[in-house]
Image (cartoon, rainbow, N blue to C red):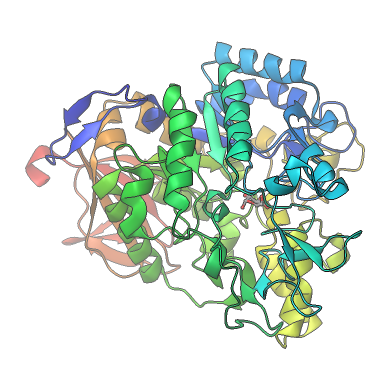
Length: 574
Ligand code: GLC
């Protein structure tokens, strides 16, 4: 894995070169990307057919959300066979074809590794339930209840107790961090761990470029399984207190890395919520468990707690700026970051971060693109972000598919909100927002397929927002993303934009500004408000601008609402 060479950049920092630092990642939610066989759900062949589109955009690495055999309770994050392909997505031959076709276009593929839990339909779990003497019983977490109640008061991420009673046995429960149909694997069992490692290596041998590793900070639970003071109206306390990033996890993660990823020239990206910045060194530092992890500190700026959408905040651009700076500075000290605006668990970024609806359009989308894309780290683009897809508005809870939406709705009401208010929270935050069918064109079903009702309702605005209109329009969001990729990866500023140091700039509260310092000095300025805002006079060559001009006024420049610019500083002005 240590395949990089070290270079000293102009900031004096030693920066190691690695191929995955130079990648631009595109995340695909396969059920919603392209439905090649017109059965209502996207599939692997659909991804293969759309490779020319992805190549045109310029991305180099695809992260594909789970395609393994699954009852699809959590759309694939509940796996019943880690080495099989879910038939609705296609076959192993389809996957191998995708791998090969992508390679021809210099696109590599990472898969989603879900090993905190399996599906309740996994053979291991079925045998564990069937036979108390089976070795598989210890592959999961079974405990006796207490006085007719579950073993403790921990709340699962998707709501309700983490414990589910075993049907055939009195007073026996199994543990699930997420849905009851996603029983947690018992990482304390070394035979289980070895089976997981063998499976990971089997996929790596097949030629995939690595993995995004799902919910990995949940694999260690406090072994006392003790109660915690309730933190909600349901009398339960979040599993996060005792089952996320807990002492002892280091041993599991180090072993995982050493027995799998570290043996291959692959990339590992951890979904590691709950890790504090002072622990980043262990996670992504030299010899850390992963090459990069996603930092959720600012993704959840609009809610106090990522999984409880009714605890909303009234955030301001200044806070977003502080959180981004803190994140970049912390990561820069120890390793490499994975930057993103959206993913399959988040609402659409224009709907979340652009607080004035009048700018939830191409101006807002380009401003956000500029803000995140040039941060130090590998950029991740989520499908549809590059054409400015937005949140939907549903009128009834029965229109939702996402398990956590179905949980948040009654929980919000339990906390005292009206049905209408509760539905509004769910609309704003539902994970379904990012999962609606990709809008390829303005025709029926947005060109997602040949006309069969899609598995999830469309947003409904595909006549205005779609890829076909944007691909050949030089002013579109798509073309802007294409240009950002060109500048980061194929311009004379490539080295600075990829390997250069991150440096915060002092700007007015509503403007987020930072520099990338290498052989060149590049500055990024983004006005995150709907008001014209004066900044120190911009000097240098403008590489990118989401407006046609930039207004100068005496010793100042005026940034229009949500104006975003990228400037190459002249040597004398650095
Ligand atoms: C991760 C996934 C999410 C899934 C959960 C349980 O957070 O991103 O989609 O529901 O883990 O696997």
